[in-house]
Image: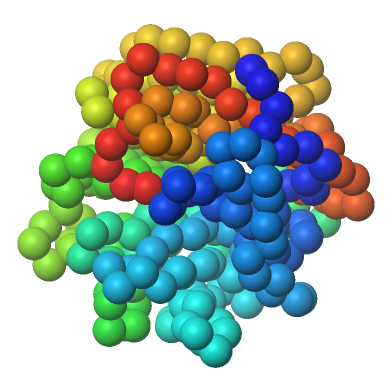
Length: 288
């Protein structure tokens, strides 16, 4: 892979929007946008807030998840405003998000404490099941799904009928049917990744195959429903595969967020994260 941007602390939540790749440099508390040529701009500095998942409302306003205070923020012309308090649904820091074409946001959370070294995959307290919350365009928050193990990256298929969630602490992708009202039903295992693979950020292509970032094993996988691995990009240890997004003019560039390691408390204070790029045959589709 080629390096597009270097010297980041911990890049997460990559999104292709209006000709640039947007992402959260979460340990720097900022949202960054970069051109395909590698020209980076800090779009928002969140001060003491740590951003994660990103998305856009139909009117073009940016949404961002604020992790530790478990809030969904919207960026208006005069700055960020709180859309929803997610605390009641979160067993740990709020995390990744996908926003559909109607402006509904599905948001996951870690499910356990990430603040210190411990048993969690990224350092922290013991793992526990938790929820996905849906925030509607009017700002109301609703329990979307329960009993998930660290719901992380999420995608909506191009036809808008299916939500796929990466359950990091269960080594699987889980799918739901999306109802007309945004409710989730018909839960099923989309792909069991097995072993030590702990899926993080994901994106989807025009064949409904999912590109999966696996931090612990240092690989990006293209996975079909049922679990068949169709393609694999392996990083040189100890680099971690954190998140990915299909973008570029033809949506055939896989933008890969990589880091020096996968434990947040070990990456803080370093600048070992990168955005790397890899060309693929099947273009991106759906959301994000």
